[in-house]
Image (cartoon, rainbow, N blue to C red):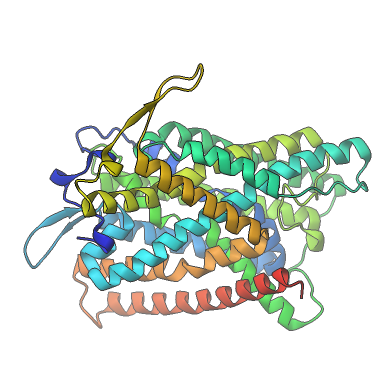
Length: 463
């Protein structure tokens, strides 16, 4: 039993989330598409701003440091996909991050992890809702500025666009599970590369047009040292959000075919993904900061550092929208699966979870709906949309989202599971190194969390 009783052995897998190793078809490339869809999301748009806060030395070093943290975490988590209990010899296939923590570290730790996992997936949905609405609004603003001039009052509300995104997600959320989202991930990963290239290209073009590189070693100057401290903390939080994908790693690993070993394939895909995203992040952040210096916008494609060519800005924002539609589902399917597996096990005779009803709408092909899936997932989408409307602050929300769960889910739990899986002896050299690594990351997380909370409060109450 897992947190809330949400997991079962392979032979007792419910029809709701069937996953037979004999039907898995995933490869290193599909895994790579899933990871890139989950990783290169709204966070990439804030990296130029983060670079501007940290400067030409601190910015790139911070990106490389968080890339290292992410890759270490990915290796540790991929190792626990198959776990053999040393006490009874039972072997468990962990199909999700939460199941792995519960199986290896115990029920109480699993309860704590469960709360963090649910919160992490939910806040990612909120961030994606905010970012998508900003990008949709930016398309309208871009056209307005093009037609009426850059000084025109082209201000529009995000609420309407959040409602549009919510309606799309209510429909997309009826996709049964992550095993049916391969096509969505492929499209989304292509979109992420596209708008990243657009951001880099526009930044590089701006640098060439100006004939000089903006920015400084120390980053943006502030009116007082305290403000600099808080802004640097928010910048680190934005970077942390840009990298995390530990929560979806085991879900993705469960889709891979074998041979070769799923663990080997996952590590290869993770290495390629982290290397690729780091190059993109350094280029996007670096070119954006080089183009604007102290005037670097909080969101590279929606902050209107770029006005022209307006059609390219529009296209970049359209790619962001398409990407985050898929990214929202990749993360949310993890939570959907956890809750629905728990319900199916808790109430095995309930027709609410088992009934499949066919629905035919106009000229569209017939599709099948499950009552539990329809009700729970619709409520979930509405909640993420509502919170997004309450806190529509891009940089501050991204920083908070990145910092609040970075240490426990990316550092602490993976290290603890590694200790158990590999039977690491306390006070051995490896144990001491990993403990120092964990403590260092804890201090970084506390700092970024404090900065993000300060930023949210200040923005919400207009301090």
